[in-house]
Amino acid sequence: MKLYTRTGDQGTTGLYGADRVSKGHARVEAYGTVDELNSVLGLARAHNGHSEPPNAVLDADLEYLQNALFDLGADLATRQESPYAKNLSRIDAEDVSFLEAMIDRYQDQAPPFTGFVHPGGTPTAAALHVARTVARRAEREVIRLAQEEAINPQVQVYLNRVSDLLFVMARAANQAAGISEQAWTVKKRR
Image 1 (tube, rainbow, N blue to C red):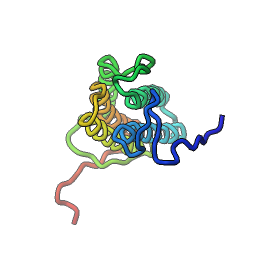
Image 2 (cartoon, helix red, strand yellow):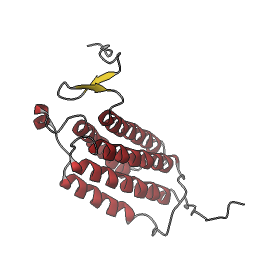
Image 3 (cartoon, rainbow, N blue to C red):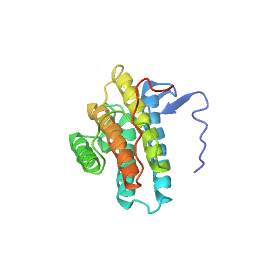
């Protein structure tokens, strides 16, 4: 099977279920941003794998999240009314609860949250902060899509939790490396 099909050369792409839409369609923007988020998580995992020592728990949690984001992307790429929807593993409230438990676990590893902190620290933490901002953008794209078409409402909730999870993962990664966070100092730039 060839990688290129030429079916998208005119600016359209196929959704799961054979519908063709513009590559600029809100649905494509939403699942494309989720794909971007998944790629940034791959970058975070690569940095983590080169840290000393690599954090095996963080890597396993990020791998879990990458797999869940593939399911979420498929959820977004399939219209609610599609006959193919029965073939999917849609995001549900149980998935959201699982993320909330992960958030609580990582929050226990980080110092008490007292305000905004500068994104950065270790390469792993910095990549997780970038992933957090991409998750927020994916959430905004999903909200825009939901204003145009029916979607699974748990997708939006899930992405909201993903960004929270990535924030506490970044904080925990810095804490494990002994990196102190820099707090936002209002009006102290000069």
